[in-house]
Amino acid sequence: MIDLYYWTTPNGHKITIFLEETGLEYTLKPVNISAGQQFEDSFLNISPNNKIPAIVDRRPDDGGKPFSIFESGAILEYLSEKTGRLMPPDLRDRWQAIQWLHWQMGGFGPMLGQNHHFKQYAPEKLPYAIERYDKEAERLYGVLDDQLRDKDYIAGEYSIADIATYPWARLHERHGVDLKDLPNVARWLNTMAERPAVKRAYAKADTINTQATVSDESKAILFGQGRRK
Ligand SMILES: N[C@@H](CCC(=O)N[C@@H](CS)C(=O)NCC(=O)O)C(=O)O
Image (tube, rainbow, N blue to C red):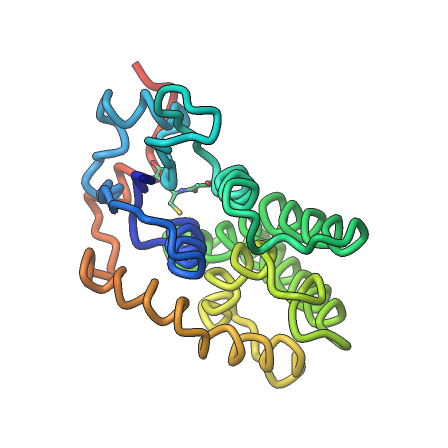
């Protein structure tokens, strides 16, 4: 029922986790972003920002024609509304989940992406950029640890806020973050990793792409983009 345009990256994993959690029927449509498949017209019609993930709902609830959505946060909200799952019913808890989803989308994900970029991929090692994003990673993981202090999950009960945040936080080593000072994040990461649906989502990723390294050619594709012609 759902076509998921996907690659094996943190933003891609968010949606496979959601789909595995809810059992919604889906078909994976791999888009190899290291090979430039995100620039194909058929994909751009669905995702004009040339990024995965994106979905097409072949059976939207209004009974109308197939319907596409890009941006992982919007997809999670849409699927949560469609299934009535993974969003707390209580007004205050629901808005906790929504706030933390937006925190992940606007802060945790983008800042950690820059952190990894300047440490791992930038051709020059720029101390200012590395320090800036290391500090930001330290700050953001601290904020998450505080939020998880007295809860099993970010918004109290398990929600799309956890699903959005986990694929990034599980890469804490790559962000230079040591869990020893983040006991609540460490506990939550273990809880998340043990969820059968999370295991299934990552097992599925391994069937799509086993290549973790980024080549010089793919760096040029991913990091050399200007305005599309
Ligand atoms: N805010 C977007 C970010 C998506 C994103 O950055 N996707 C990356 C992979 S994680 C991508 O498709 N990159 C391909 C490109 O930039 O050409 C979302 O959460 O959906």
